[in-house]
Image (cartoon, rainbow over all chains, first blue to last red; front, side, top):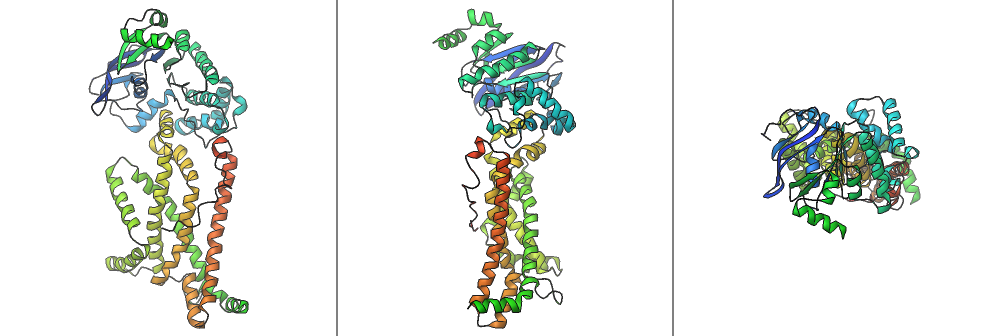
Length: 255
Length: 252
């Protein structure tokens, strides 16, 4: 964490510099260096246990790191800072979980409007209207008064996306957003993500949906054993993977 | 036999209801109700604070409270009451009323038990809810207040009712330090009659049963109302009716 993270260029949304993370003796992330440009959609792929989820969780500091730094809007999110400062930074990074993590005790519209009210101090009326608009955008306006337990997985994940968007983050992180879904529900979530990408949202996604990666991503990061082995635009990555490990990974996917 | 009960109630209802009041301190059922209500009302917030302290990352907060919970769980309530009764006046030199000593002891004792219930409720929610709240920019306390505790406390309603009910029953132990409660009044009645202990103490038992049962009933209907409001597959698995609260008594 001592490494200073230099001021990013205006076009850089997230800069990951020399990030290392250990669980005891086991090194999960090995000297990761990478950047996400504003408006860019990056898909992180790689075999399970490679450190994808850990990496994306370090970006909003749900996981701590052992050394290096991650700069977001010119601030190192892993620098020592007051809790309130960290909360403010986090509130500007949308995060979508594999297991949705909706708040089951709140109605759908309250799930979406609660944090703008409690964290940003938006008035209840304004937050409520905004929440209804966001729910409309993810196609769930009619479910506003339902509870998460009454929704399908795909609907829950779309609510979770609306909930993250309600904080108006300039960046969205997706941690395997479709992995916990039944196959027929994957499409509805991906189409919401596609429309977000089309609107120019900066996105960093861990996903196994190679079709989504091919269609939407600007760049792929291929990660294995805690190292980024290859970064390439999707057409290059899928047609001519350079790293042997990436070649094997893609060959395994086709089977 | 039935006539005995009617006679006792006819003759002593006022003593059983309010003790010696207004010629002496307020006692009887009124005092039992006040003591129970205060003990529950104070033990509840105390237990939440203790649970949060036990889950805190600061050792200075975590260790003393953990120690207190362990000691309290390992000592019979009666010991704790007697100990407070004899030691607190020695330490403070003040003449602390036995009602206050009983109240403080109950709050600490039941607070410690309840804090374990609350802690279990928080821990059983898993990390995901806390992560989600943090990712949205909530601080630890804000996440606790708006996300974690509303769920943890709701999930723990049955166990909390058990503790509340046993709090009501534990107020009877105030008898040993002369807290003028319902048990004390019944014992006075018994001392005057001398020949009808069965009748007197059966009346006492019935009154306590009604008290505890009403609390359970009210709490059940609150739980059912919340369940209905949140109705969905998640909660449908555990309808409140199907789980007639495990309130019988998980006597501690």
